[in-house]
Image (cartoon, rainbow, N blue to C red; front, side):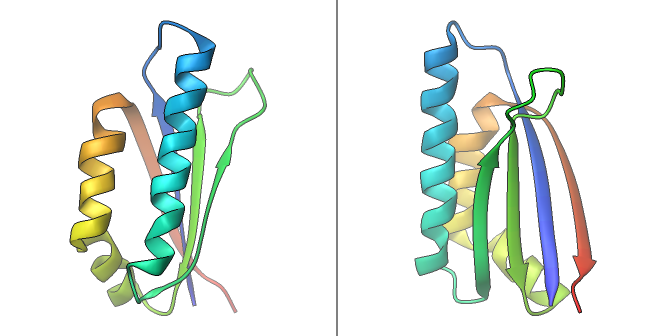
Length: 101
């Protein structure tokens, strides 16, 4: 099993409420992919609660193989969220994939 984790840092928003609304939209759209992408075994989106840290969102997914990670990453439903919803507000991204035994 592969755990694929991605952290996102978002741009500045005019208000905390607007940022929170966008983060919630990202969470809902990403978590909805579990019903659309067969290779996904688990998907979860969490928000950073520590204001001293710079990352805003943590995406955690589990997939059977690294090939499945690639399938997920290139799936049209994922690409639509990544480019259409996250891309316009993303400042930075970090990712790690590791085996879970």
